[in-house]
Length: 523
Image (cartoon, rainbow, N blue to C red; front, side, top):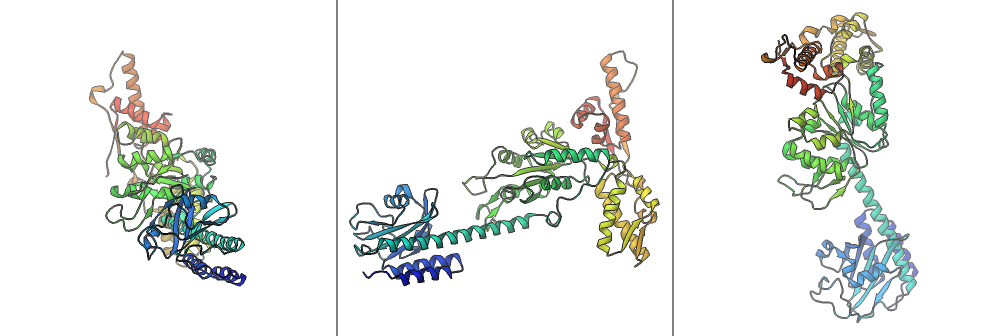
């Protein structure tokens, strides 16, 4: 055959450089190879972990693209993968050809033919192979070795660029899925700011500062509305993973039949309605943080699978045999007493211990003495900007009124009340340059209307009386003390446990033994 000119090689490089899409690059590469070298079949294969995957073919049957060739099982491929230079196999080579029966115009074993392979290296890494076959024996014998090396280099560069583009596209698609999975609040806000100068808030900030730099799993405990999600975001922002995503999961909102799919993902066709592949939350959070809110609502069946991920760091999507490793820091939050839930058999004890490597308790607002004015100021400034006012302030009378309230709904309730009061003040004072929230604007609630009557009952057979038995007398004293503190704390077991300097779960167990119960009623 005639020699391949240098101009033809240059045209090959220019043509590949002008290709925009990955598929276009592959097709043009094979087109140009066939222009340079007369052949009946040409294939581009990528190499990874000993497996050759056809990514573009010409002259071979379409099913070739679906095949995966293990190099160690095909002598010709094994030789090519071990070579640093192009390899031309003898026309009468006894080695089986991996393309036997795959050529478009032949459905049987290949007879004596020309076969050549070009290893494609980028740096010192084997990216793949370019294989060229001709039904005419000795067809490639006259091609200069230097020409084949140039073709190999150009093809390797084209393959590397295409693989890089694919990787970037996959990363972009992954990032888009991450963004879609984030809540709007987590998307537009940073780690937030924990407002408060009370002693318990300083203690909370110290705990966050200790836990954040580690990769320990953190269990955030606290009543509804205390700001557990804000604590979780702060932990993430102060961690080494702050540049990676924090993915939010509300365990209470997950449909029970879709929990496994939501958390671990599924492949197309894994179940009825699975029309496309979906990455689970663990895969989306890979390299970052997964925030499992309301973890106490997770069903027992899902808890077992959650435990496996926390133990091994391995995720298996529904309908897929492949197991993927993930690097995820888990932060969980709950308003339940998980220790007590474990005793009742409603939460796995082994999962509880896995989650509570570093427990953090978020205090109730009524325990944060002096923090209400700071929080009110924070909310008012945010509302001022939202309403487009030059100034929005609150009167001393209104602030005193708010500070005197017990806030059973915690910070969330305070935020809602301040928002309503600001709206009322804005409506009442019109478009004044300066709007002031007065006490009348805060009368949307009254302390008595928001309080829940508490009744503490005891078993009749354990009523106090004259008793000379030491244990019975001790139990009677404990019962009386627990009952009094519960009444003072309006039936809050968590607050009573803090007052009594004991663990909430232990307090519940003791009260149950003593026959102390909290009965709440709405008036």
